[in-house]
Length: 105
Image (tube, rainbow, N blue to C red):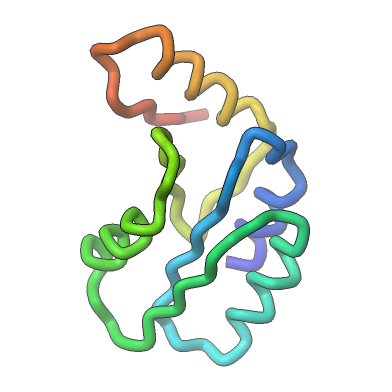
């Protein structure tokens, strides 16, 4: 998760209103990693202390979303560019028949 958050924080996140982190390993240092890596970005940190499973954890994260768009990623992704936000949003705004954009290298 540290690498993923470092990679994300290194990108232009000016279009991002909030980052929500759901982490349920109960690792003692994870809250510090999130706080350090995302210090400049507003983000609720929702630590789930028991295993809810992936879908229930995602549902919990989505319950905190207050915007029309969600960008979902996992804890082992890396971000080579900031364009994924702009390009994905452009597709969603241009095509009413598209509800999800899947990114691949």
